Length: 117
View 1 (cartoon, rainbow, N blue to C red):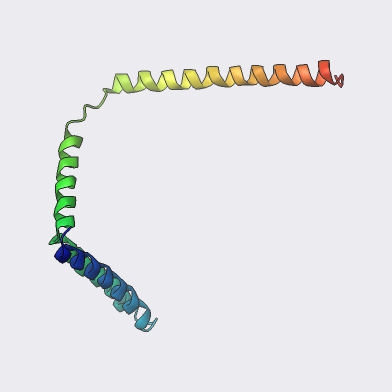
View 2 (cartoon, rainbow, N blue to C red):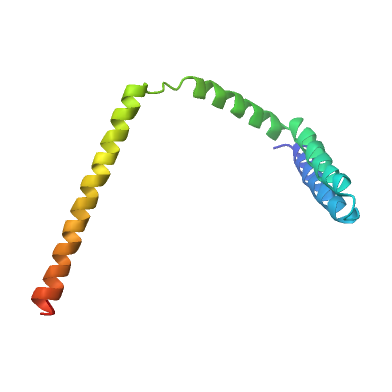
């Protein structure tokens, strides 16, 4: 990152801090003005970042992300229900297995080893 871009990022952070400081400096009974200070600070910081190299890289990344998301092939309704059924079946079988193992170990330890049965 160039020094000019670093200055822009630092200035954007300072604008956010100034917006938050403005929120606390405005009297509490003027709620709209307090919120406006924060929103204005964030908007100015966003505008400052928009014109930096970091902002351009983020915009390019966001565009590429949208393009990749458009390439996703979603499953049909039938496939979705089938996979959901398989997941529920697997969870049920696993729950039964874990119950059987827990009961078996409880029987072994409490009845056989400790003789408390």
